[in-house]
Length: 235
Image 1: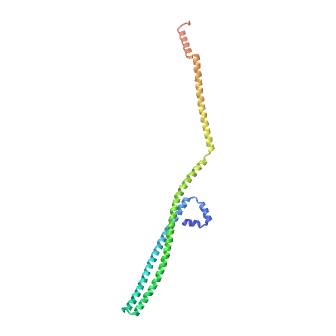
Image 2 (image 1 turned 60 degrees about the horizontal axis):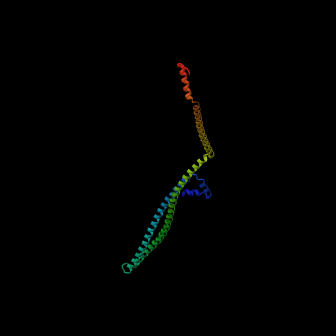
Image 3 (image 1 turned 135 degrees about the vertical axis):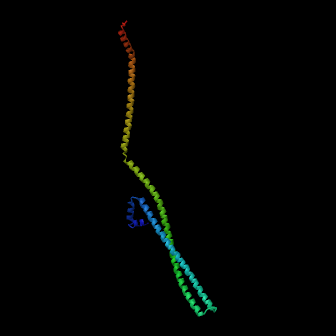
């Protein structure tokens, strides 16, 4: 609470501007929670002190009330003894009068102690309300902090992804992919063309060899050469 008190001392407009410019909401929220915990400790200490005063005031009130009753009984007892002849009337009246004076003093003090006890009791009630509110606020903001951390994590991840996507040149990427597709298509066509050319050449050679029967003619020529060397004459 000290943190927020310091913040809002600047004025509502300036405070709102300061909140808008906060770069680390998690850190500042954690600081605010720490301030609330300090306020809670102070409030608990004050509560304990006021409770102690309230208890003392109640005890004093009870003591003075007891004295009032005691002095009242003593005054009555003195007069009773005087009436029975057990005590001289004049002495009894003097002592009874002094007892009544003390009774009045105790009655005044009892009244004062009662008023103090009531005031302290009111303060205790107010402090207990404050403590409950601070505890409630701490629990609330601790839960809010968990949610805030999760939201910041998601936000950072989203920003990172969006930045990465923004850094990508979509048109260049699409153009590159199209060029790669065309390249593959060309390679496939070229491979097919080579295959057809090879098949065509093979078929042509086969047709020519078959037509001239190159292997048979070569064998005939070699046979003639051997016959000539051996002296055979051609018939």
